[in-house]
Length: 412
Image 1 (cartoon, rainbow, N blue to C red):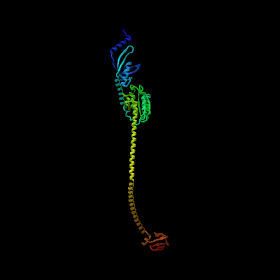
Image 2 (cartoon, rainbow, N blue to C red):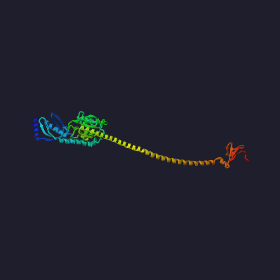
Image 3 (spheres, one colour):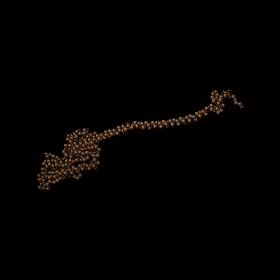
Image 4 (tube, one colour):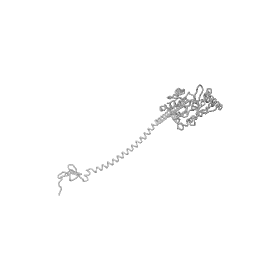
């Protein structure tokens, strides 16, 4: 039975590979691992099934130091990203097989535009997902408070950008006062997403204390932006109940949270300038209102003073006129009262005369003159014969004189 040694087999495989892949080729793949050592970069490429779960192919590759020193800065400058796991790349490779180290891919070039397209695609997928959830513009639609004095800052405590931000606020030329508190977070690397979300949760626990949130990052490499392009972080920022201002410090490109935050500025210093300018506009408006109030008050006072002067000048003539009018009115009232009193007196005098006439006609003396008489018993006038008895002495008053009589029995 014919057999081969392992070395012979591997040598045969190397010759086959070299004969079929005598030139470089362009390869599309996803990075599963990126590791640097001694100036070289070691990569692991994978390809997943269409469902995105199962790995259907895997290969290792390397970029030697002399090539890596050229490719790395070019890639990072173009994409604003470092090569990291999960990134899709288009690389020019030389397929090699070594008797000891086996099959590998040596990278001689990288097309950053392909990765840019994948980054843009992933960002757009996140934005589409936020739009489906109905939260894409939620933070942008929050009203910006008229006073932005209490600022919750998410940044790294050691970041130069954070110090620049604080100095810019404290040393503003207008004497505007701000109250800031740092909620520390990692601003590059794998912990960006979890640490910023944790800081947002801490701010949410004291929501009434703050007017807005500022997320700033300064001094780091532009290639460290991967952590700001995640769905979980974007959902938290988009739905945060306070306006979020981002100053990530990347001039050339926008991260996902830049696109969904309330206000995006380029740098931490620009974030401070935005807050200062906002407060300055409010201060200018307040000063303008104060000037208008002062001016309107002065004008009103002058108007009222002139009005008072006119009234004071008119008072003597107005008093004379009013006095004359009141005197005429009083005279009219006096005349009416006099006439009413005179009429009333005449009426009462007439009634009195009628009463006097009636009274005179009812005078007993007048009645006696008409032939009537008054008979009294013991000084009391009699009105019935039954009031007297036999032997009573009666006194009868006539119009002229008085008669005395004694009651006797009547004749049968």
